[in-house]
Image (cartoon, rainbow over all chains, first blue to last red; front, side):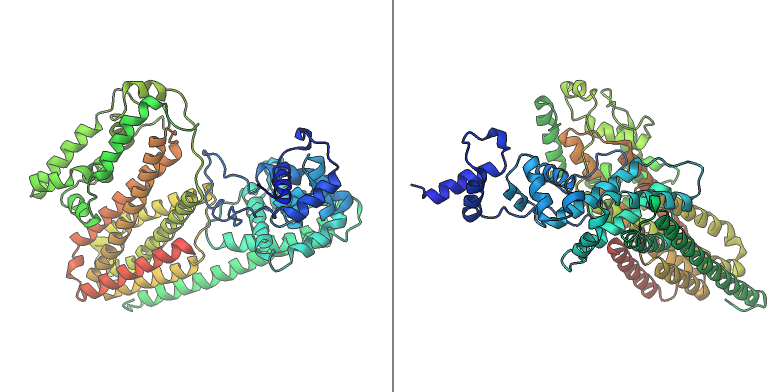
Length: 276
Length: 316
């Protein structure tokens, strides 16, 4: 004989995952939410590995891509919640409104293991994936394509710009820093790949590190940018990318000079008969 | 999407079970079979080792004690297995090399006529699991690091050796050209599959140059012993990768998925490169690698260093 609280809990739990239209009992949402809040356990966190590194380690051009990090239910709630972000910001309010408009209970947002950070991660993921459909002029140089792609990604922040600083603050929380940095690294890798970079030596690392830093700085600059069409941000981005290219060129030149002189010195010694 | 039609499953899985019960031959024995007498311009014979030698090596080594008879027997196995199956599959590579033909004939010979008819439909490609992706990315990373090191070793070894023995210049040139080709291949694969290159690239560059230069200064025999040690480790390493890739492909075929040209091409490339590395190993032995004076010290130190570098490059 199940106690009434548990049976209500069971009913509440089953209602978490069925859309409102399927309910048979026209109960008032407030009382049932409170009941389920006090009696149901919080849904187990998503046990899928959150590190994207293993899933993105090898890009198989012909095989299907790896599964997305969010389950279909989570994606439904987050995509609905994302439409409320421009007005309510990255907050529980947006999540609750989103869950409601997707047809779930407000409490369904407990499905998301990281709460508001899941919404931020959804924002980062969606805009990164949209980059692959950005049209690029085929004749431009690598640096022009990188600037174009980076600015396109920055412009995607425009609708949620008033709330971006609070999003960055949430991303900077210690438990979320590894995921945020990983997302930044993956974004830099995606931009360089789409721009056509094929370097496979240490410049792979230096290019991605510098692009990550430049993107983060430009995003922060953009949160205070009030110019038309964000042209100040574009100018900032162009200046930083130009400096990075100059620095890279200088390091390469110094390396070439040192290498040439070392090899020439060894060859001169060999021509003098040294057994080296 | 969930697997082959019921009619084809029983005989194929039974065949694979029987295959799995065959004792696996250790790498050293496989090498003995390869190195004894194979001609290098017959990629079939070396390349079929993981497929042919495992079920047949015991029989082969008993029946053919001398190298030349082993060679004859291996060629016989190759000829028999290279005959294409009548129920050939329509999936994957349009250009069927003899290697892929013979491998596919080995698996398709186990299928019934009903399965052959079902196979002519297009089967989907299975998505890769995270561990498979991690394996492929670390494999390509290590291979690129290895070829980079080999290129730099030959670059550093060539001037001291050729200054003393100019007749070795064509050989050094030939080995360097092949290694440079391997490096280009892996660079292209890494860029294509968006694999992260090894972070210790500058360290391996310095160490490889130092190793090549120091062994060349010690003498021609020491340089050849260095080549022998490196190529032995690399050959075993490539064999392990090829074996793992073949297991992946066999699993897909057992579950009824298609095998794209991406993987058949990768396996063929690795086989070709493995054969060329073993060719270098033989050249080194033919040029007095075994006569290097602290032979055991040189080879064991270099082999241990290679194993350590491979282990580190897989992770970092």
